[in-house]
Amino acid sequence: MRDRIHGQLLRGRYRPGDKMPRDEDLAAELGCARSTIQRAMRDLAERGLVERRRKGGTHVRRNPIARATFDIPIARHEVEARGASYGYQLIGREKVMAPAKVLADLGLARSVAMLNVQALHLADGRPFIYEDRWINLEIAPEIMTVDLAAISANEWLLMNKPFTRFDLRVRAIEASEALAQRLETRTGAAVLVSERSTWVGDAPVTLVQSIAAPGYQLVANS
Amino acid sequence: MRDRIHGQLLRGRYRPGDKMPRDEDLAAELGCARSTIQRAMRDLAERGLVERRRKGGTHVRRNPIARATFDIPIARHEVEARGASYGYQLIGREKVMAPAKVLADLGLARSVAMLNVQALHLADGRPFIYEDRWINLEIAPEIMTVDLAAISANEWLLMNKPFTRFDLRVRAIEASEALAQRLETRTGAAVLVSERSTWVGDAPVTLVQSIAAPGYQLVANS
DNA sequence: TAGTGGTCTAGACCACCGG
DNA sequence: CGGTGGTCTAGACCACTAT
Image (cartoon, rainbow over the protein chains, first blue to last red):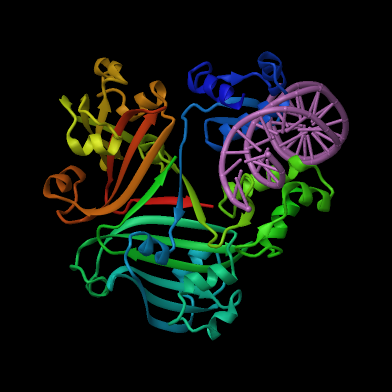
């Protein structure tokens, strides 16, 4: 039934910009319960094909949205999924007041003490992802007592401060000389940078910049 | 009610790896209908927090997945959203048999005739995104009669052959000399490449490689 | 404020798949 | 094959918001 409803839209029974009948009328027309229509429509709304507003009704979006989802990989799992052996190196850790750029990305108005951690994830002993992370010590003070040479900050945070929301920004940059050295590549090589801010509720937890070795590729779908 | 159920998980009532009670028991315990539990659980499963299997029951995922969603922007809207004026240039169009790489990305076993189109999207007259597209003429033969200098292939396809599924691959590359010229940047500049294959049902429609000018950034969240 | 979608109930039957 | 989640029904009440 739901597939039938989806089919009608996808096969062009309604066109971009059209207003669709109210759920109740659609239900009567198709001979099903309103809750069935409701669920079908909810799915379509989540996929970005229609827009629903109370009292306003349901409209087919003028410009159907291409909504992609992807699962942000955990370095260890990604390496192991490729059949390589995973390695991890703690490069540096330091307690400092967060700089303005970090505060801005996390939506903080005043500076707070954070732990700044650099680390390298390895695949078969070769650099895979370099990460530079800021951890809010007001939210996760326990991180100071964790041996970050034994467990990556990412994995500790996932287990102990599971986030509820995050932002992600992806861009391409040229490797600086220092970065090229870390990643064992050429200065000027094109690398993919993912910058992620995460929150627990409204509290900013961590900002991490992950820089993948050349050739890395993000995959999404739907 | 649904929020209460979500809250219980997020607040750690169940731990990663735990098996949760069957829907019916949870419903009895919380004093609500099973369908309410079902919907709450479905949401959690979509967000990647739990895994459900018939007969197998519901488990909290061991490694909570960070699932991001982002809306693939239409170049015109993105430019206009930045307050810039949008421009579009058709650079080339040619009917050819698809090469092996294109066939592979679209999951085609035999070669078919396609329209190969190159175009440039501009923001305030400056290069914004260069795209190289392959359009399956068996699925969208009408594209041959469309004036692609007047409407971009992307917008025509969205209006006339709305896809039902796509894959997306994002990576960083160094601009070749030819590409640098198109994007009015340096040879060797790091640029973000998005490669997208789209299907209508099982039929492959188009493969497009979009290369953004340096500084471009993809944004996702959840 | 009235009309629409959003949530919930109490029940039924079905589809999948693990023991 | 039996137990679990997936879908559906027919109804109720609520929350938001366009008119």
